[in-house]
Image 1 (cartoon, helix red, strand yellow):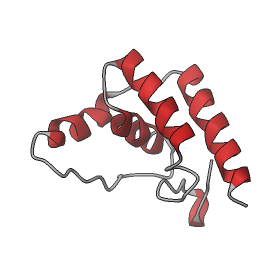
Image 2: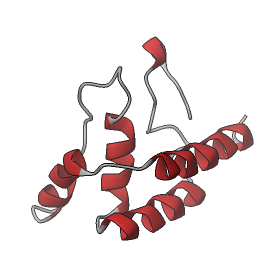
Image 3: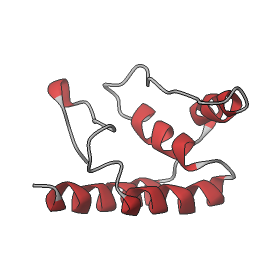
Image 4: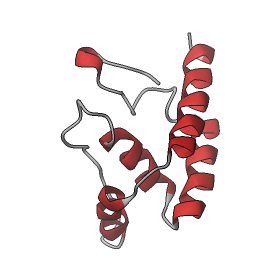
Length: 94
């Protein structure tokens, strides 16, 4: 996981926007019946130092999907999958 100031995860880094991360969040999203961006937001929101995530939607219909991220409860297995590929992506960008 990429960590910024005050031990807060950074999702806009190149490590997080790689196809490997996108593929992982897509697979997890299918398990939770949500879109990959909601999984990424849920992953961010579960960090104790994060009180809010800044999310955007290009179309009005995407707002419901973004709001749904707050209700997603990722399992420890989900978290492990995301963090494993995030770590690999971070190492590959150094």
